[in-house]
Image (cartoon, rainbow, N blue to C red):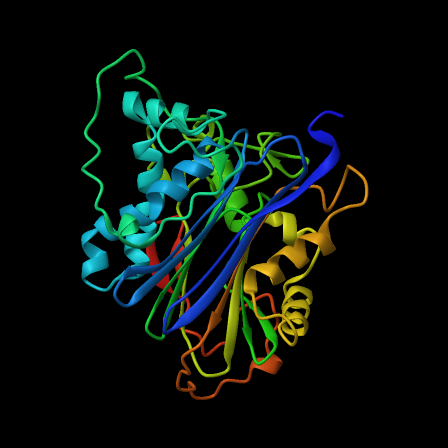
Length: 367
């Protein structure tokens, strides 16, 4: 049956956790796909005041998504801007750093390990999702020195992955996104998208693709990739005269910064396997209804998968599914002049402090 199984794998890998500020539940399910290419990272205590959550939806293999789940949050910690309190810049640099780290002998070796049926380092079975815990997430990686070997000239993987990441520090929420995984927040029951799905037909994406020498055919970059931004996919990043943020496909993320308030109930990060089946508002409504009778957030995620799973192979509801649900415990003060009901789910409220990275400049700007 091609890329689909004869029957779906509905076993779910789930987890729950909480601290004094928030609690989370997460789950992943392979579904109808022949392989599981999603990964995630969940760390309640990136430091004493900061939590980190990320969903990575791989394509062309699972190695890049697993690489991001293992290393991206560590690179956020390493960057000097993180210590200075500039979470947006540290996230942007970490996204771009993933492509750099996956090149050369060391990148090839790590991707080869992560792409195997069995992880040679940890022994995790195929499809299990990386979820850093406690002090493991705080361990600083080294400076990733280059290695010599037969793959020293490895330009990086042609497989790739989306990355949608949320960092919560006190009452600040910072979301970084590259690709079509999505982060949504529920404010008094109204869904607000905190990320933008990076499809090739968006004007800003189309402009960059064409200027970099690419083209769009049947809604796909160079006729093959249905994403305009991703980590990996090095075949689209070979123009040596252009910086990383101006390549045909870029890992440069959009950054959105939100000041949380007491009306904020929960946020969801999920891969497009969910959003293909439910709109942002439909998912928020479903979660709110489930939370009336279900306390375990991972169970709510599992029920979303069961609701989205297609009865037969082919079309919507057949993709891998990964979802993280984060519920806020500590009340936050209300920002002034918030009128959530009048704002579309396509954009955050105007009172949100929204910061987006400019793909033409590779720096962040306030819009």
